Image (cartoon, rainbow, N blue to C red; front, side, top):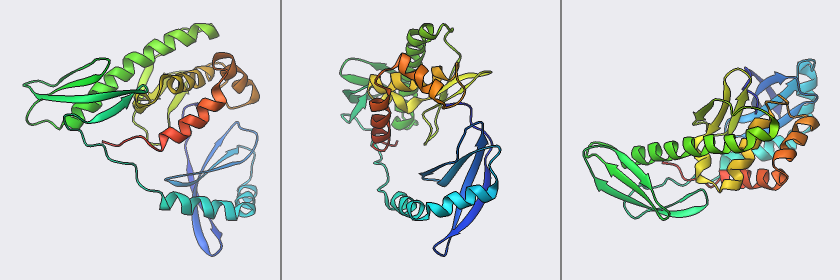
Length: 238
């Protein structure tokens, strides 16, 4: 995705309820509504008036209220207990966490295990996160190097993100940011996000031309996009 633009705060009244929403303007062609744990988000063209935006929200008022209610009633993501013998999926493979006491935090991955050396005063969850971040950085750089040449571009600089609702972003100036939690998903899903962000180096928008570039890199992008949304709701928290 392109680098995130500033967001302004507004509100409307739906069925007697005050509904706050964040508004982000960009070069997009139409007004779009979405719901996440932050509430109602609106994307709009620069030319769209606030009245037009509010009118669209009112027209979709029932949908907005239903989706907001569904988000609020969702079960929270399961918290992963990092103990010796725990199981975790990394790139689609089931791995067993193995923990041993050590003077210095270290880690290693095998085909079946994540090996963690954990000092007495350190939280094992922090060591596991560091291990996964390290694994993610190596993998993401590798996948960027695989796909970038297909667009005739050099692999861009990579930053790791910890965002809870955003899997990646792209800036022509600073490169690509990818969420380290993607390493908890199967490789085809990682590749879809990598291709999505690389495509923004050609089209810094979500126009039909952009999706054509994504399809050039990842013909199965639509299926993988849906799977990303499904799996994203199931990732453990630790």
